[in-house]
Image (cartoon, rainbow, N blue to C red; front, side, top):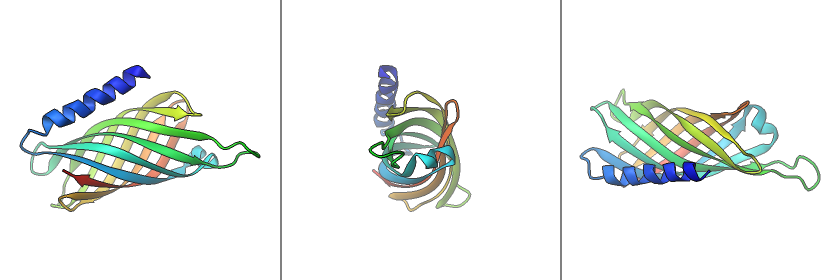
Length: 161
């Protein structure tokens, strides 16, 4: 667990260092989600926050790194039994902008669980979205595979600095 937090700290420090680059944007935002698959039996809704760095590689391709936390609002599984857990994905990937504002992208990395859930595994996040310059809106499928897959459909809004 300490190694994952250390990796996240280095990622954030890298974002700040890259901010001096010409076409680098740092952003922060919130996300909401609907659990899908097996996890929908244990949770109704998900809400979280993320930190995102986007580096221009060309006019139409951007490199992307994201660190975030998503908390799942658990269902009552039995009287007085309500799971409390979250997910922390650390992802890198790319986006392609077929037009100035619309993008399609994907990210991969590692995600670990917190609270009543434990472990972690391969994380991936395909997405489509709209970039309005200072603000981005993205729809994504988020998943962490670890002896099964925990997945959710997400909607995120990010403000870029």
